[in-house]
Length: 197
Image (cartoon, rainbow, N blue to C red; front, side):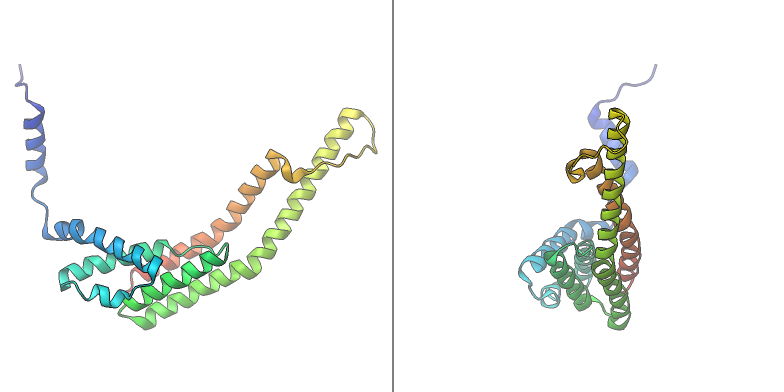
């Protein structure tokens, strides 16, 4: 019969198998959260990122910059309103300030701006067309159902389809599909930007 071990013994064995954390892991644990806090402060108060990052030694600086970059990249999204547009600009300005290869970063930023501009200019009209088309389709389905129930071929009722749960659910689905195309391209550019030093 096998030996019965306490929970503490099992935990010590697991820790022994894992081994000691590397210096890189320790730096991430220590400075990663500091980079996240710095990014949050920058997004809210617009502090000088370059000055703040320069306060760290070279090893810590690398971790802090990576952490700040991750947060700023996550804050670039579809410009659904004016606040989102401003947040995108602030995030991109912060990223640009921290990138060493400014030309490569600007190249990707111009691609991102094209996607965001297209979303605002073309996307809005495409959304409106899709909305009107979906609304007309739903109105016709409802009128057809009324005709079938009443047996009157020219029966027509005024129904606000925009308040119907099925319409709202379908509109959310259509809207998500349309935005997914933009988000896919945007994510590709964000990954490209993350790879730039």
